[in-house]
Each structure stands twice: as structure tokens, then as C-alpha cells.
Image (cartoon, rainbow, N blue to C red; front, top):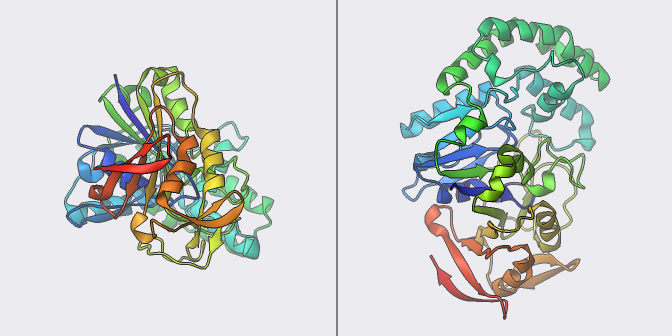
Length: 409
């Protein structure tokens, strides 16, 4: 019998998913990255003051958990190596990392093309992080009999990677740029052989830092505890109503179900839908509850692609809608929970929300009652009053009165 937890962002990302994974994980855990890629930035602060923003590594790494990058995760050798070097240098910890050989690989060409296209869009920017996620997915889906795909399993062969890069810069990337009307002068980086040589070295280094190609079917037999760590949030899912201001990824339950298949319904399953006590959004795109109010955030600094982090009141209506659409329907064995982080930044007696299409201020007790429809199978509401795992507690709720009755740590 497996102990399976799934951590999913309920909004536009930056909800505190890494914080919760750190709380759930231990040294007997495999943290599974089931979507997204290096654009994720999951901040974990330990009780003794260590702090890291996780991109490739699972957010349970401080707890001794292993990381598995599933076939739905997009690897980036350049950013992987930078993160690993920083993590080992600061903390002296060598992470245990396994990768599915089918993981798509982002190249520097994907990143540069992504950034050039976003600059060209001007005021019509999509809100991209600029790390090539959309371009990588598009390249892998291109109708070319797979000739332009590059996966983690290819990284062990430096000569293959070098030849692949040269072929792609002569065939695929100029065609992709032409499709979008990108000016020729924006493509000068394509002809820099130094970029290819550096990327080949990065690929070799990443390959040697991981435990080779491990299919999920093998990894899923190792241990009894798995924490699935999602990236971004349900309102950024590639099929959400916010298109095109979305990510090229399935941000909810979909990929987890794909990995486990029918076997998962036989396991006890806990899904944690995470939100801050308010909302945030990066980059362009609709944000109905946006406010001029600001909150403390040390991770999300202003950048040329997404600008400043935007803040909004907690949109209860929108959040419940996407959770309802995402939550799988099992006859038994499923518990769906709500986790509210950053509670220390709001007044618990006057939390600003969007509810019933209107802006309002409500107490924590009322908010818990409004969130009740999202809870399944004995699901609970968890609160976090600070940045470390020690700040997470469960709020027991009287279902008859919809009021908070007891705290339990």
C-alpha cells in the first residue's frame, strides 16, 4: 500500500506548494515533479534558517527525500547545473535525483527564441518566464516524425547532442522564427558555435549528476511514500479559460493520473490544493481580483519578461470552480484538502475576498465554511502562519456550524 500525496496550486502559481512539500516529505519519500519545468520557483525555508528556491530539485530535498523528474517534466541542463551547484555549495547536500529518459530537454535556442518572441509582442506579451517552456513543448509536438525532439536519454552522447543542435539551427529554429515574423537580426545567436559547445558540456554534466534514465514504472516500486509536486496553478493550465496567458502544461491532477493509471485508485490518496490567503499573478493576463495592496514576497523579483509580481484578493468563486473541475471522482480512498498559506500577512477577522461576484471582508471561520464544497473524503483545511514547516497546522471544522472550533498542530 502506497502513501500518495499530490500538491496542486489552486490559482496562478506562487501559492506555497514547495512549503507544503517540505512539510509532507521525509527521507523515505520520492518527490515526483509531474509538470512544468525550470520556470517553477518553489521557496522552502527550514526551521533552522536554510532557504532555497527549488526549480528542478524536489522541494523535499532538505528532508532527505529523493527527486524524480517524470516524463511530463521539462528539463533544462543549463539551469539544472546552476541550481545544483548553488545547492551543494551552500548546504553541502548532494541530492538524490532520478530522471525519466523521456523528459523533453530545453536548449539555449528555445530560451533565446522564447525571449525574442516575447519582446516582439510588446504590450501583447503572454507573460512568459523566458526559459523556453512553450518553445520546448512546441518543438516536441512539431509534425516532423520526431526529428527535432531532444530528450534526457540523448544527453549521454555529446556527439549526438552537438549534431542535433547544428541540424536544429539549420532547419527547425529559422522556420519557427519565420512563422512568427521574427526579424533576421534577432537570430544572430543561432550561428554562435560557442553556444553549442557550452550546451554539450552542460548536458554531460547533468547526465553525470543524475542516476540515468529511470522509467516511472520502476521508480514507483521503490518506496511506499510519494509526494507529487505540481508547478504553477490550476488557473494557468494550458486548457484554462485564461488562454493564451497560460503555461504549456497540465497543472492539475491529469498528469498524476496518467503516471499511475488505474493502480492509483487502489491507494489512499491525499490531494492538497494550495492557495495563499490572498492571490498573486506573474506577467500579463486577466486578474479580476487584482488590488493595489502589496504583500511580502522575497522570491519573486521584478524581471524583464514578467515585470512585477501582481497581487489580488482571494477569489473564492474562481478557486472553487477550478478545484471542482480538477478533483478526480473516486468511489473511495480520496481525501481532498485545502491549504491556506501566508495567513500571517492578513487579518484573520477581515480577510479580503472575491465572493459571489463581489468584494468582501470575511472572517476565517466564514472562509472555511465557503471552502467546504472543495473538501472530500474527510478533507481538512490546513493553515500556515509562517515560512517554515513548523508553521503548518490543521484547522478542525464543525461541519454543522461551518465555524472553526479547535486548533491541532
